[in-house]
Length: 399
Image 1 (cartoon, rainbow, N blue to C red):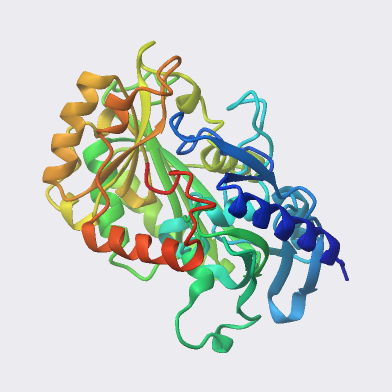
Image 2: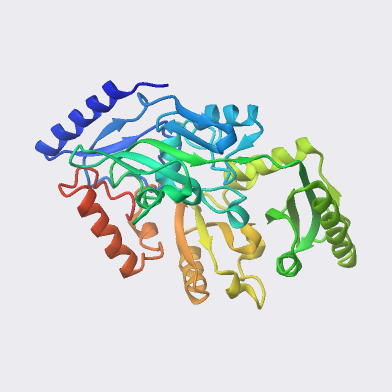
């Protein structure tokens, strides 16, 4: 059992001092997501580190939950779970330091929750918030609050612990979190084929109407491909019982052959390497801008908007989540056109990583899809309730 009472008391004192001195605090763990909604230069903030909050507080493999201090590295938690044949099914990105941010590091559990990011499995298994059972939080009044429990049925009234997902540290300092975990599946298979964008999307739509163990998908331009330049590398992962997976593989291979595309089943190592590169954005697409002034944009589209085919930009995008999530490199002029098409389709578009030297370009940030008024009003009410003095009001949640 990890005893963090002294660390909690020190953090509460720090927050009280900031409150009395009208100082804003920027909560930071290992810094792997400093690039995501970076701090506005117009707001002065002092860092408040969570790195003193480390350790597993409670882990019951048979009960499928783990309770962890917020500064604990995600890699350590995943290693512990893997030793028991379990995992965090939403595949949170770890963003290794050597490929993305010079000052970044591997993710912490608190940062994973606060940023609310999920990996390739998000479309089939849900996101971070769907696996939060409980959380402990020090709010802007230095009160140490407890929400939720260790099982779903313990939650009564407002499920505040899930609200912390994507809050970007603006509601308070998460000290520990309890997460639901799941067993690793035994029947895993990843298929790869070359398909035009339109046929890849249409295939996913057909497969999605059947009871198949679909888990993750991605399609993207493969610079090594020597076939039709209009084709994309289509990669599909299935997870579930072995019999169900094998049956689905036979069906999908028949579909691909009918489209005159030869499917290839990746080895376990090849599959793991691919999905890790998508999850952690170490895939070559994410480190090769289309132009020196291009920024990386995250585009989310409702699947119903794709019933008549993919958007015009899809051939140049990296697509995930069965067609719902697109990553695009675009400069300002291209981003304006993107915004118009995304808005017409009922989707959202947000700046993910600004191009070199454009980190503080307000014109780019102005192209982000605005938060709906009702959602923004709810966010403001939550911030006033948890942090009336604005100690954690850094502007990161809604720049």
